[in-house]
Length: 238
Image (cartoon, one colour):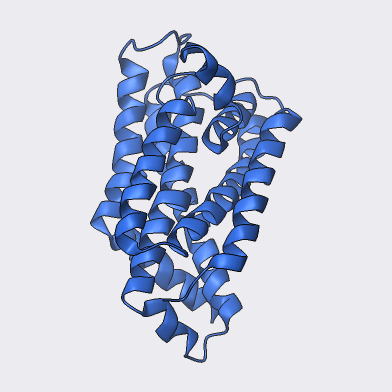
């Protein structure tokens, strides 16, 4: 039952045109553009330092913005309420969405990884292994924030707010440009945002082949725990 529901949720994400634009096409375009154009002070080969930030962007797009918008409109059209009235246990509904999101993130990572490899990306095998749990942690943290936004606000507000937050976390989190290139206080703030923390931890694993420090992990855990805790108290089915 869980596998079937996960498959349906994953197919719904992949078949949605706007979701595909947000979760795959934009990250892929930014990966190619930032790796080939001389934007910002990035050491050569540029793709090595660009790839961790694009992976963080892909996770944010799928787990936060995509899930928030999908959940907001599912509530608006009564999908969640009707599914809750079926024989599907609620834990299957929740876990199915989580697993589907993880599957889509895994697919994104493969597609982006192949594209990056064609651009000259050569991460160490240990770095790739260390990146897997970081991607899972980032997906859960952003997913909790997505449920908080999509599960409590009206669909029209969710659409505007989720896209606005996506832009803010893209720019202020050091995903479009390295955090060191951001002006003034933004450089320090980037590491306290979930997008900046995920990019920093992935950079440590994939670029330097090292384990990330405690701060980016703690930032992701705190953001996920706070968002998940508030969402569990405030989420509405309709």
